[in-house]
Length: 224
Image 1 (cartoon, rainbow, N blue to C red):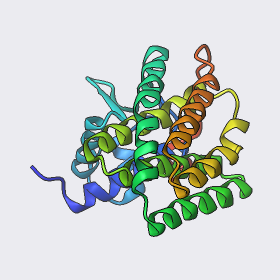
Image 2: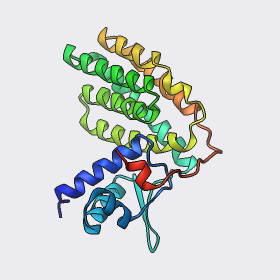
Image 3: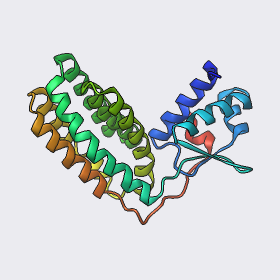
């Protein structure tokens, strides 16, 4: 059965909150509290949570309820290793295929990311960084691989929320700027090498021995 429009709206709002790190891994997602926050029924909330569980942003535990997913250290390694295999090749293809309009779109992503960083909104900056990588995969014209990359980036957001130890690496804009330059110049080899180096840097910025506790209440996390 197709989710209702209301459940899709709730799912999108929760997904954004997770990607922007307003909802931390391990946070309990109570149906009653979410229903009160969004002004919808428990049935609609349950449908939204099930759709997020399908894409592994949420885990639903029998007799305990729903929680923001909490990837293990092993999964964290696997996700970044998969990205290191897939994304450099898509960056090469993007450099070979990108139009002027698509390069302008990438530049707007970077401008929005920089604005979020200047506003000290690191969660939003991280979300925009993920969208930048997804856009490169889309430009590459490899739809199947792009879907895999989008799923991996969703998991990466949770992994970074749990295991990030070097926030400054997120704030280093030169990696994305250099990627845009290589793509704009049609330099596939440089784009591939830059993407691989960038992802390895992100991977090494994880501290897989530390797990942060889930913070504030749902109402605080989801308030506009």
